[in-house]
Image (cartoon, rainbow, N blue to C red; front, side, top):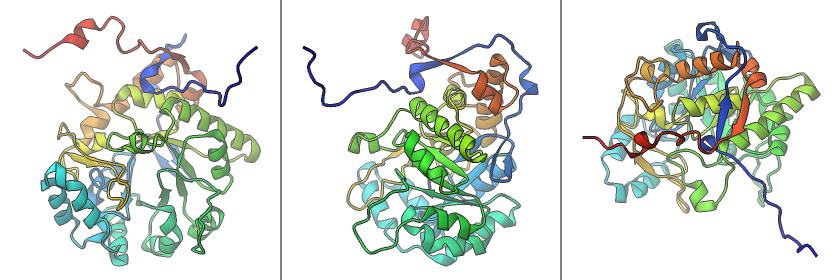
Length: 383
């Protein structure tokens, strides 16, 4: 007699567990098109800079926009709590590791200044860039009018996990996504999600894109603290299925963005081949010249006053934004020239554009893909 089981487990896969199968037809990478859209706003490259204070400020948002991508400014971080956010950033960078969480808890408990929200948005727009800003679900309605009137182009509503059904247990108003989307009149992006059902429900509210990922970021400890999350390949594929189902239902194509765990060209390629329309970068941008964290990166859940779920990490300064996105590069670990890697992958599977990549790329389970035949690389020590 078969023993009863309390729960059934299914296998889930991350970036290092899979590989992309080469196509039967290949093409010149120069012929590939990596563009995509959020609403009616078109981007040349599928790269979004995460709304994290160590990697995103006004200057970085402007630079990414000028390079064909998008930077999202965090409106609940130091950029809006301090008239001069550089002073707060300098203090965070200079604080010893054992004291930095307490310092950030103090800084991030300061009141958000509405005039700073307006100022930061106007600074991005004045530079001729696309202004995308991020708020938490609890503050989305509170700051909606300010964000819209300041001239923002895209609003991101992001939390560790966002669903359409939230039981608050209080009389305070909760996030009403259908109403918010109508009120804003600009694309509203929501995150984060990792399941088919939750993503499909989010898309039915009228949002313009969905961020995919819970806990995979290099500076995030949500998975360690809460045990919560789904590996990014499985999460992306499940949510891509929801996107395609919603398109059949409505005729609206809602892009998904794999958010977190992107640390080299291979992970960009695997995310896109698994169904992502774009990827979101945090720690890679934090490593660039001019990044606000000056070589440090930290998760936005870190300052939580009761249960910090992020940590400040040292990532170093290893190249310019242009090198990380387009090269040229002399590093061999795949962390730079991400767009070059993506276009080369598209050429190797015969995909002309991102939609073509979704259709033609075959993903296989291949946990040996990074170690097979690489004994010399894995054991190599610098002389």
